[in-house]
Every structure is written in C-alpha cells, then in structure tokens.
Image 1 (spheres, helix red, strand yellow):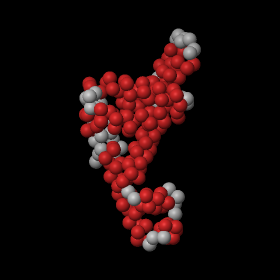
Image 2 (tube, helix red, strand yellow; image 1 turned 60 degrees about the vertical axis):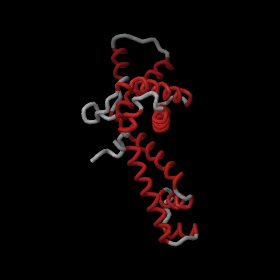
Image 3 (cartoon, helix red, strand yellow; image 1 turned 135 degrees about the vertical axis):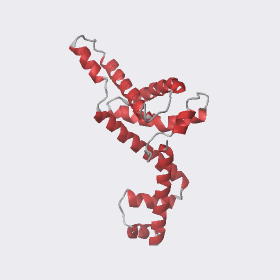
Length: 197
C-alpha cells in the first residue's frame, strides 16, 4: 500500500523541468511554508526562516534536473528535503553565532550537530503531515458550500454533536451527517492527491 503522505511523483517529475512554471508554483505552495514552519520551530527568526526557505528552494531547484525519484532505493523525497533544510538551519545558526571555529573536539561536535537526529526527522515528518493536511483543508474549503465547511468544523474541531450542530444551523440531523460526510470525503481525496506517489 502506498504512503498517503508521499510526495506526488508526477509533481517531482515536472519540477525537473525548470521551465514548467506551473509545477514550480505548485511545488513552492506545497513546501515553502513547511520549510518556514520547521525553521521557526528550530529557533530562527521569521525573516531568517523566510531566507532559509528561499535558500532551500534554490538548492532544490538546482538539484532537481538530476533528481531521480527512487523511494525504495534512495529514499523518500521528503527525507532528502529534510536533510537539505536541516543543514541550512545548522548553517544559519552557526553564522548567527559567529564563533570562531575550534579544532579537535570542537570540530567533532560541530560535525555531530550537522547530522539530524531521529527526533528531528520525526518532527519534520509531523510538520509535513500537518502541512499537507492544512493544504488539503484549504482546498476543500474553496470547493464546498460555506455551511458544509462550518458544519464539518463544528463537529471535527469544536467537538459538537450532530444535534447541537443541527440546532445551531437550523438544519436537520441528516443534513448535518451529509455535510460532514461530503467534506470528509473531499478532504481524504485531497490528502491522497497531495500525497500520491
């Protein structure tokens, strides 16, 4: 079974062509805010986080023409993206400290600091999944009636019962259930689409 959070292979193939501006816009929309969010969580200031995202996007842009998608052999795209982002974060933090580079044990500590830990990869993975979910939710909001989206939010975010929602929106119980089902189905479809291999 494919990983529903995997980066879409078709998009990865399209961004190999730097002239495909639509692909790059979609790619940028999917990943820039993720990179900014990860950088902010790692302690960078907002402006530095934006700069980091730009630097990572440039590195990815330069590397994509030679990029070969091979999730089985070389690993997932998001792992590669995480590695680039993590190294940029470490590099920016090092520049901000502007401490003279030591030797011996200091060099070893610096090399170790440049290697991401499993916790950091897991954090990136959580951020990635949340980012894709929110992108899918924004897309669904554009496609459904406002009342359907609000009903869904009242149920899934606010934790209200169908009866409470029916009373609030002056609709019947079945309409509440239908709105929730429709929005949830679209949300699942968008998450699958955004994460399809």
